[in-house]
Image 1: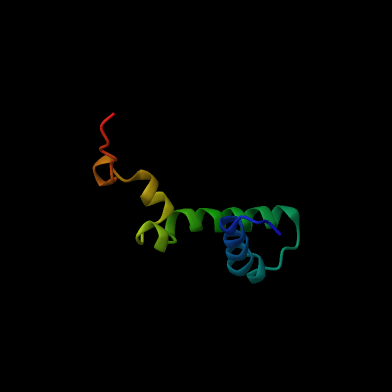
Image 2: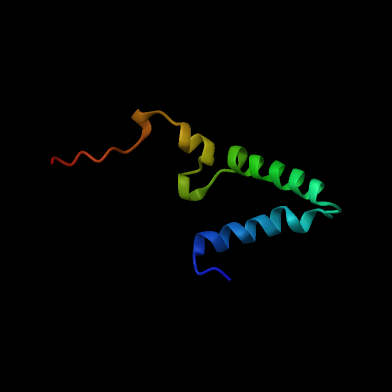
Length: 73
């Protein structure tokens, strides 16, 4: 079991939301189902850690929306 809490959280979500919900009858079908889940997870599932944004929204938001570190060097 990985020691990284982020990996453990991801593995739990993948198992609970995808793998436990489908009967994977072949490798091809498993790849298709997991890819569909990955796309939905990254594009449509909001994250509390991202202030309710989806990972895609967070990654593509404008530079003006980002908190910029204004430290003087």
